[in-house]
Image (tube, rainbow, N blue to C red):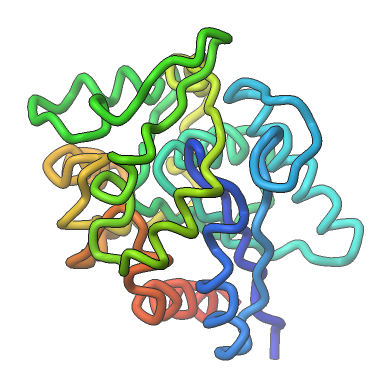
Length: 242
């Protein structure tokens, strides 16, 4: 029997690999191998912050390391801004078996996070939550973070996550991807109905660019608020491409 693919998890803006810890534990219990990447300057990464293309290259480099270990069957998962990152990475690395977008942006060639945001006429709370740091980065005001990212999570879980948020380069939202890998790679969109960061109505538009759509009645962070259900989705995809 063919081995199961690795789930490679790419976080969104302001986050790090840490946000997937509960999800990875659940995947472990199901026998599904996973790796979460710290994009440069996030989480435990000691590299400097970079742009969207640098983030995508980090993913490509990680996939190369996995191949050097004999791991060449990968389901690549992106959350929020991470959707742009995995799209660009998949435009450069053609070894990916499936792309999964969790409440994520799904740019086509020539599109960016910002250009896709303009598709939406409905405001979310994210704009009020962001503040510039004066060095080309955005940070999140802690008092807004639970409502925006973790609305369905407990206060304790949200507080622990908020303490680990880090700055995000403004430029990452405006940079365009160079390819449309969903033309040749199967894709799934996980749409979150209670999202206060990427509005559900916008997600419905973004989801039309993927091959299939699964809906969860939760906030922007289902890997924390609906861990078992998110793991079940990823397990199903992994087993279908093994």
